[in-house]
Image (cartoon, rainbow, N blue to C red; front, side):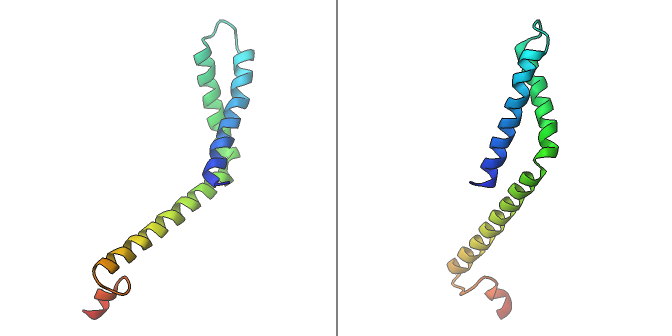
Length: 93
């Protein structure tokens, strides 16, 4: 399972775990949307600390993908320019 999906499911689980008690334990006269907003803020605070490892894993995966795309783009540009490998033109000058 990808780290991004794990992180999203963990955030959703924490929100649900905060929303259910908020809906039933906060005063009855309070607007349900306000209760859900309170649960959202509480779940965001909990996720900030509880999911630090998953967040770092997602950031690492995103950085690796960005680097791979940059390398692929440079390789394709070199191929279109007729060079055998990226940066070949710099060495000839």
